[in-house]
Length: 74
Image (cartoon, rainbow, N blue to C red; front, side, top):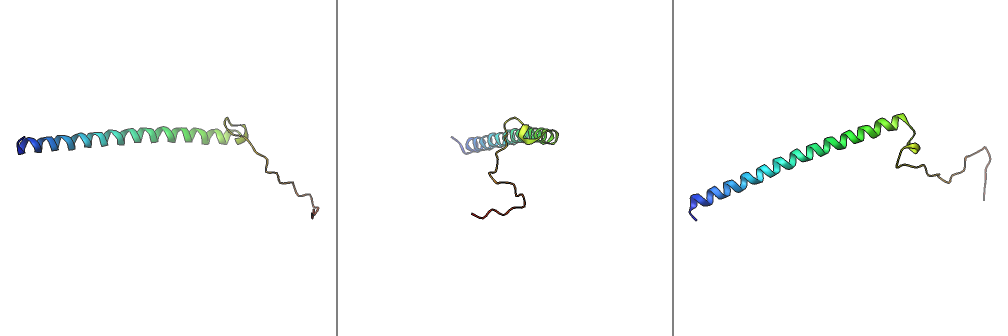
């Protein structure tokens, strides 16, 4: 393989890598936009209803008794 042919091959390879990087950057941007839309929707829903009522969420009791002006020393 001649020097010129090797150089062309290297240039083509680098060009292909650049194209792949550009494609992946576009894909990542679209994925990020979809995530942002989903988060915005969740935030909007959170403002409309209680978190405990949202699908996939549940309220877990803390196990802490409410203080009613009495000291309980054990």
